Length: 241
Image 1 (cartoon, rainbow, N blue to C red):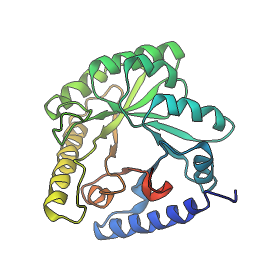
Image 2: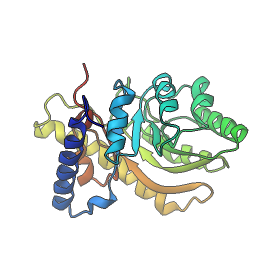
Image 3: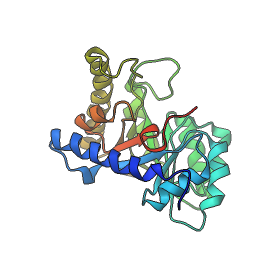
Image 4: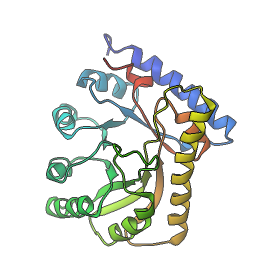
């Protein structure tokens, strides 16, 4: 697909090279790392271009934007991830087609996903979002509530809980060692919770497989701290206006 979004192929190649380098430094296998291309605010043509270069997973923040793009790709294999805050009244719109919801942060939301998934006769893969930075404006459950929420979700037949997600504190200076340490602390907290829950063998629909942490600015730290799912936007699509 020649044209405006040809640069995406080069960006994907560069990103994979950088991830491989970070993995080598952390003695990890790059094949373990799942890349989600965050396509919010970019048009369907940009998604199509990335899809042409074998990028299958795309993250959207807003239900409305996801619903506008989804019909354009019904004849192709594509995995849509809802990575932004999800309101209960919007759940019904995405349940029939979403590949994974990363932002389950309350029992009420999980209950609604269960209800709508049961109605649609489907099972929805979800991650519990944890607010590891303690910032009031960020979504996510309180880290003290994570295990309780996971146990509550374990009773829902139409949800497959696949792991945890967090958004670390945004750095003002990505080279500042002090800021990087704060981010590292956020990621380490989530990794510790992930391991603890894994070791509990809660059973039911709980399969702790994915640790979704790390974005364009901090994925190198996330890889060092055990992330296996990166949500990368600007390093693939370019910077937003």
